[in-house]
Image 1 (cartoon, helix red, strand yellow):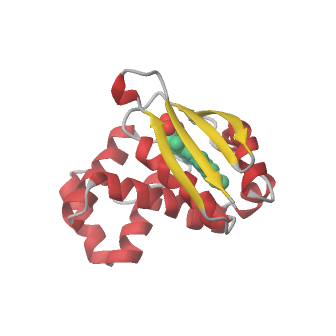
Image 2: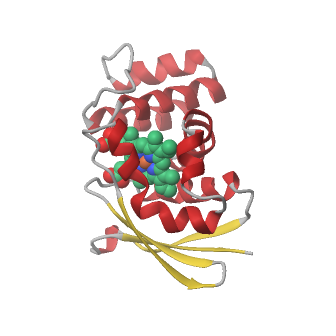
Length: 181
Ligand code: HEM
């Protein structure tokens, strides 16, 4: 994944647990990269090693790290670094979710070697939607849960996100049911 993802893990750990904690996470991960460049693609393995090392070092379940990373990615990386892009996605949660299937098309312009997730969204009622998540990567479903919760925070809209289908049961994609008032 592009270095911006690894950098965001670094920022999350450093801000919440201190820069020494990040140094220990990086040592534990065995990742020998001193500095991540946002616009450079790195092997996915690096990102997963960093997340696993953070889980071990901070004594938090990996799922909790990935979910917190989803919140951070929306509220800090997305909102603060790419505010205009996020705003172009929609002015409320409903509109943003409706535009989610196209969202990474714009990001592809900035990061041409992106291997983006794919989303299909279905309105299931008033204030209710299903988000179908397809990926070439394994192990990121809980990150998506965190991202969707992060969107609720971004739009100041209390939401419930529950996963109703997982690839762990042999399905080809995951489904999240989202509802809000
Ligand atoms: C401005 C905001 C965003 C930026 C700049 C961004 C950028 C990226 C980048 C660089 C990657 C790494 C993929 C690669 O390098 O091949 C990525 C992955 C991903 N993004 Fe985004 N993204 C943004 C917002 C979102 C949002 C709002 C969602 C969903 C709610 C999302 C869902 C994902 C997922 C699930 C992945 C993991 C890739 C996979 O599942 O295979 N992103 N994104």
